[in-house]
Image (cartoon, rainbow, N blue to C red; front, side, top):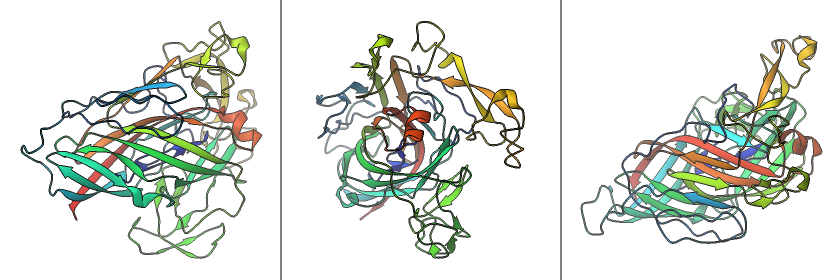
Length: 409
């Protein structure tokens, strides 16, 4: 399926995925138990897991298990596979499947916790082909290779804004079941990270286009390479507004990050830390290569211990009440917030979300609506500010509510 979500991350990214993916929106989740929207898979069907072709997590999803270098991840199987030749719920043996990202997404990137609980883009669309026997379909997203993965993703945390432009590094592969809407896909992206200058506007905005992805350029780029040019909205950030591939940033990238979501699934992904941390003094394991430490927790002791609540007892960090991405000193009242930016409010002390030794995310099957989840590792960028605030290299997770539309082809 053509998936769109966003990563990438990057402490900012992540985003990523089969269907679309900003700044701390005030939501908090328990990173030890999954975080983000959690749901029990609907009608069940077994789907064979795609086999990763590059180093990454090991995946088990009701099919053959493939092993690759890196941390181990288990993607739960949605259930038994339908019998070929039996009753089919597919509209045709050959269809297109269009996935559209919806509200209430959750993106957690990096080990510091500051860049967790960010929303991804809404109304981003991705289309793939389905070739089916009975209810069981193979996803053919080969045409996506080299194309944009949604529109630019605006992100900001800890006073550092960035715009992430995602491109499909390879075609999307996977499986899908017509009866249940359950599926697994492998999504491999290149996420180009652009360090922005304006906290309130990490990416150029497409102003005035009322219908996203209709092919009609009814808006105008307010900045960037095509300032003043016509644009068609490709996705909407609930924090920063509409972005478009017609409105790309003018600054240069500070990192071209390979982001692999394998799988992006309606089932359950469980990742266990198994990599030696770059700072051995923590005496702990990490999720990703070159990750400095498990999390930012100083307390409870020992350092790096994430409580069952999913939040560090200490340290906290400061964020403005009216602009959560703005960094501030909690003892300074409005000095770092309202006094600098009208509407930013007062500085508040925030608890830091943390990843424990296991990360679990659970999706939801559905033929019309559902939730896609995934885990991925995020390399470091060439911008120390981004790496320090977000905690890169480090892990990332995405939980993405989506709607879907099947059409015979």
